[in-house]
Length: 109
Image 1: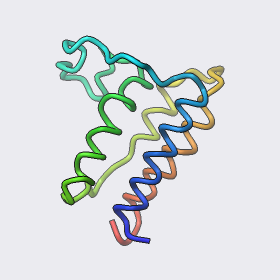
Image 2 (image 1 turned 45 degrees about the vertical axis):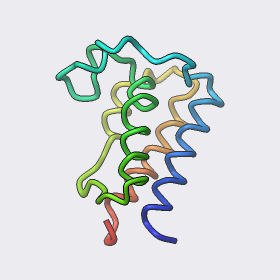
Image 3 (image 1 turned 90 degrees about the vertical axis):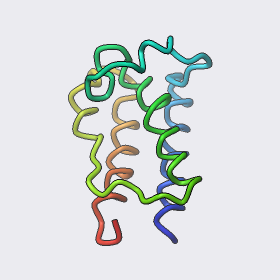
């Protein structure tokens, strides 16, 4: 399977996990939340919001355009720290993010 297709499928899995655990929002945060200069907009967005409103759409835009994908990519380490250990969605989200990161770490990356 082609790398772009594998990345798209994994993004869909991330979305499915967020939806399953009721972490998918129906309304976007205020536009000012996206003006953050912090990594992951950590000062203006919750970790799950950043996945939904920043990472997933940006990667889909790259895929839709047939653009090159990032070479060095790892979001799972941030989420291991940012997500509360007691949150019921934590483990499932981390598994999907580790799998997403692996698609950017392979020899075909």
